[in-house]
Image (cartoon, rainbow over all chains, first blue to last red; front, top):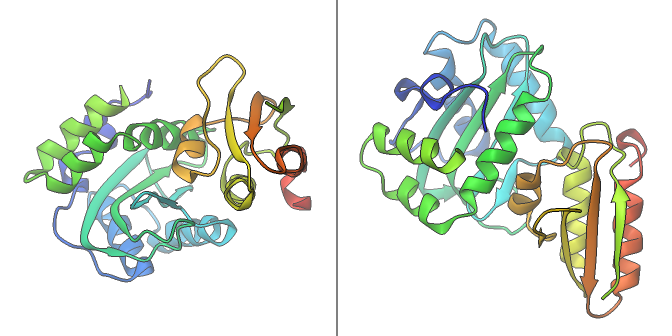
Length: 154
Length: 89
């Protein structure tokens, strides 16, 4: 279903099981840093600006306790996902007012066409399943998260 | 049950602002609205996660159904959102 395999899209280094900052934008920057610290971002400020522009259009807090900030930007070298989770939940301005517990970031290069939308819809479909959300919330290792995403999107 | 097939106009498809307006309108409607590809399974139009999961691109046809009070009015408004270019929304 996805062009890139999950090991490449979502390497273990881009998965964090520790609680991110409780503020929406601090959490978004935290996700961005997971991808940047893995050497995939050439211009952090430009990537952040692309995320800000998308978020200004409409929130990426899609409800059911999930936030999926995403952007297409020349500042990333390859399609990338990052994951973190919040035990307390973060106000992501979701329409259902549910705080976000599971956070994914999607960044794709500017020449990536509509690939980010393909990743976004595959991930969203996967996250509609209660079992997938539960596995991600309770996972004790990064590998468990990676395996759950691999299984759920394919 | 009232239903109609609409071709999605906004450039990015049912995503970002058009999707947000669409889900907000479906949520606020008295009718229960469902949306899906013409040949696919419909989902709850009031769920942003479900609508995002459809991954509908510009130019694709989708089927809307509505059941309950003001169903036709809800479909009218949703069709208007889906057929308005994003910069005019």
